[in-house]
Length: 84
Length: 445
Image (cartoon, rainbow over all chains, first blue to last red; front, top):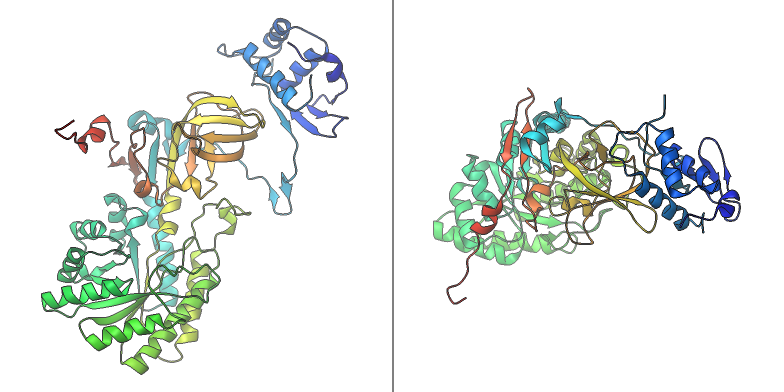
């Protein structure tokens, strides 16, 4: 299940990938792919739509497993208490 | 143009990324070794793969030799076989003029087989059999004794041969700024070394000529060598004055640090390791303090790690990626602690062997063993790696190819690259037949 967009909307996210969590004070860096996924999750997009957006936004070599990458990123968000 | 895709990364900021000593050490891509593409070497010799640079071996030897020549009229460097006794490595150092320092009967035979004259072999270590001593005395090898029972055995062996061989004793010193290795040799301050000397002199079956000390390993405080040189020098002067023993050689062993970084060390080895000049200057100062007038005896050093460690790298290939619960990225590679036991001592330098891009994040490198302890590097900021990518692990020349173990995989090829760009095997990889060759199944099974 996708992370709750409401929780993600509490995060301060800069265009360069700097993330601030006002509840813990922790700060993070995300790369361009992570930033795109975060923005898509905030918008409440489904996994399929997020994968499609990544395909449209980035130059791919063809052997990437985007769905796995998005899944793992969501697990990272939960590990860091950035998502529910 | 769209940006290149890289796997999504989220890194939490922590303290210590930068400090008054500077930023985190930078990574660089190491696509070649001594000018030869790593890919080409791996295609020919496989992965994992140990690579030794003949040039660096010779450069390190000459650097120390030059420093010694500036301060000492009479010195010898002896190659420490236990650090790396591959024939090609020993040959390089012997070509440069090194004697052999051996610590077992096996190593003694290896040095003799390599054609090293007995008088240029020093035999240390705590375990010498009657057969080892018999061989050593017949060949004129100078033996340094570790304990009284060994001296007794040596006296019997020498008497049976009808000779009075020149020998030495190993001394350990308490008053040094490093932990005392009192398990080796006879303690100086407690008087046990003097007792051992008196015993040798009284019985007259051995001709004591040398004092040997090896104050520890990876010694990063050069002044410890000044104190050791001074202590042995003063002891030698005392022995001549009081016991009539003329010590003609003081062997200060090894222990100089390489450019590796210990796990508990703050600064990286590249910055923290003393230069050869610093070590040599301190040894000279110690002799100056002990010998006020008379020429100091022949200085012997048995430097091993500092000569060979920096001359080798281990190439390894990425087998997979995974994410640990604490957030670290884990990378599984095909070289583990079975062939890199020094990973238990050092935070080995690791570099990608190809161009890299993407966000660096805390990464742990695991080897291929089905054991939890198989950690090649537990935390390093590293860019993303794909299956099949290669890494270069630095400063692996000392102890790995002598202490490695054959555990669930074969030991890999070891290659030397020459100063002229040639390369060749210096130890063949083991295979399934190697494994079976030593086994027997008893008839009753």
